[in-house]
Amino acid sequence: MTSDVADVIVVGAGNAAFCAALAAREQGASVLVLEAAPEDESGGNSRFTAGSIRVVYNGIDDIRALVPDLTDEGVATTDFGTYTQDQFFDDMARVTQDRADPDLVELLVTRSFDTLKWMTTKGIRLIPIYGRQAFKIDGKFKFWGGLTVEAVGGGPGLVQMLTDAALKNGIKIRYDSRAVELIYENGRVNGVRIRHDDGLDELRARSVILACGGFEANAEMRTRYLGAGWDLAKVRGSRWNAGDGIRMALEIGASPAGNWSGCHAVQWERNAPEFGDLAVGDQFQKHSYPFSIMINANGRRFVDEGADFRNYTYAKYGRVVLEQPLAGKLDGVNAGEFVKTVAEWNKAVRADIPFNPNIKDGRRTEGLAINKSNWANTLDAPPYEAYAVTCGVTFTFGGVRITADGEVLNTDYRPIRGLYAAGELVGGLFYFNYPGGTGLMAGSVFGRIAGNRAGSTGRN
Ligand SMILES: Cc1cc2nc3c(=O)[nH]c(=O)nc-3n(C[C@H](O)[C@H](O)[C@H](O)COP(=O)(O)OP(=O)(O)OC[C@H]3O[C@@H](n4cnc5c(N)ncnc54)[C@H](O)[C@@H]3O)c2cc1C
Image (cartoon, rainbow, N blue to C red; front, side):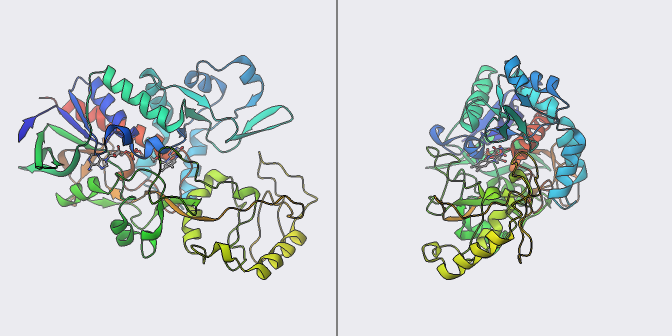
């Protein structure tokens, strides 16, 4: 069956997709959102998030613009500091070891505030991330990691607010509709083919925006691109992101870009299920390591747990965990070595330096094979708590190459007419590591860019 369904088809129903759909609609285009999952599992990884969004702000006035119901008392008891464009540029350069595509980073950083403000006009409500991103010391909260606001209701709240905004603006959403192929005729994309129980349907449109995630939920692609052992990683989020968007685009000649062997991966509850569970959300994460030590099955430490604030290390330590003699063996940690490690540890802690979780306090160890740079505390007074972890993959870094207008480029570096991309499946932004809260911001910025362009050029 073939039908012309809309000016713009958006593939996916996560944050990037809805931002793209809302922007295209704003340009006057009719928009259809296609979601592979049934409605009760929809929303992709965006729904699994804490809803934390990294955004540039130059002080309290910018925070007030994003969080209009911030109280005077909240302002008086909080040091929000700043997160300037320079800080965001520096963070992207540092954590990606200067590999991130400068044009994409420029857009991400310079459009972040404006884009998030735009989202608030669509009905997205934000609050400060007290507790997880700011510790209260001497009666005052201080934000420390460049990550200051989150969506009300976290990821589920964000997806609900985006869905409501889409429906309010006349955007149609079709669930249980997995796009499997692009309709590519005479050098342009004219729609998609979706799979259902009886075969394929053709849905035609002037433009298609791919916003259907990376290949993190596809064990075969993970092993092929990330390497041996990655089939064993637990998937933190949606089981619906199987790399379809990337595959469909490559099939018609799209240029691959970015860190195809890289991904965002964290320490994750060892007995977590194969894929994320919406009832548990992000609660399998084990992010207290900056204030503790990590031990492998040999009873040895293997990483500087306090190298930086958690936001700047967590996304790369999942890979390190995957490389350890850990999975399946934690019950049998080498007890003798473990006790020796802790004894050496306790002697090495510079306990004369005060502990302060709001700053890189320099309370370090000295003389160990692997020292800890900050927040080192002795382990000499019970009760002790330990968590068995494995590697949890969040999303993959490799994807398709886009222009500054969100158009997908082919391998001759020319735009594929009618094809746009946003979100996880765009390559070139993240290499090796990632500053927390950037995934949602990137989806919003590039979703809006792609939607604006597709909506203004793709009307019937
Ligand atoms: C547990 C967890 C916590 C996280 N916390 C944060 C956080 O607090 N802040 C942050 O910035 N980032 C966070 N991230 C990363 C963040 O989720 C992603 O960077 C971001 O949500 C990606 O948005 P997206 O729209 O590109 O993809 P998604 O939100 O994953 O959306 C992709 C959509 O495409 C659909 N889809 C897939 N294939 C098809 C197909 N063939 N046809 C139709 N539809 C398809 C999926 O069902 C889904 O709806 C977290 C991730 C996880 C897993």
